[in-house]
Image 1 (tube, rainbow, N blue to C red):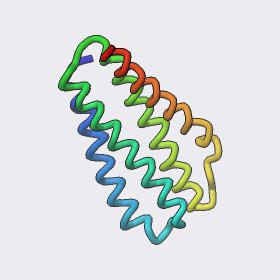
Image 2 (tube, rainbow, N blue to C red; image 1 turned 90 degrees about the vertical axis):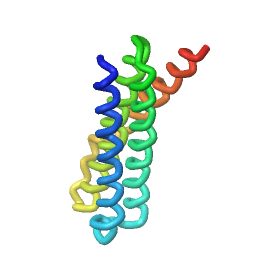
Image 3 (cartoon, helix red, strand yellow; image 1 turned 45 degrees about the vertical axis):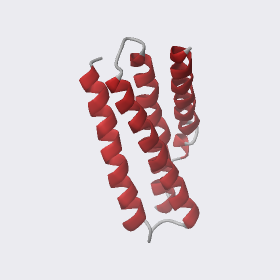
Image 4 (cartoon, rainbow, N blue to C red; image 1 turned 30 degrees about the horizontal axis):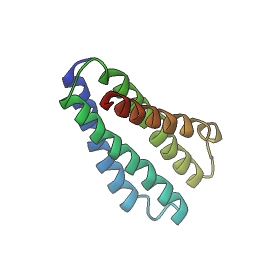
Length: 122
């Protein structure tokens, strides 16, 4: 993967986090319970944190960062987007329960990505 791919992916997820955060704060505020809104915000925060990491990996691109890139990118998709799906489907009273087990897999990929950064530094 190229340095450009890392940076475009990170910037895209960052931009989307801003859009989804604003959408949650304004449009969904009336539809979601307080707990649902907090869960949605957690998805947005984790998405933004890892979008920033993807940008940094892009600026320091080398072969070993590709696995980190994959961990964080797939982690965002599985973690944050499963939370969005769970919250919105719950608010519509048609909860997509199959998404529940997907969220921790995304979280585990985040942990592996961070561990790889630690190992790279050592």
